[in-house]
Length: 94
Image (cartoon, rainbow, N blue to C red; front, top):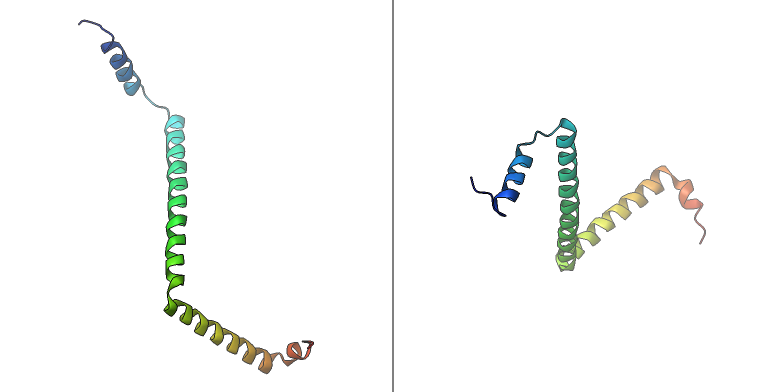
């Protein structure tokens, strides 16, 4: 077999590939891969969620729905406070 500049690095790579990895090495590779995937997913996911929420909040129907839900919550809170805890309302200073 003739050895030139291209075969020597190839032999080194083949040797490194065949070299057995220890369990610690495998765990380290898994940990690094998981960490990289999680960081990529978090950045892409947060950006995507942010864009979708901004897009949804621009619609007039979404604003109206949020207003109606807020009104219902305030009405229920007021009713609950006035019926079950009137002393809280009495403590409010005007």
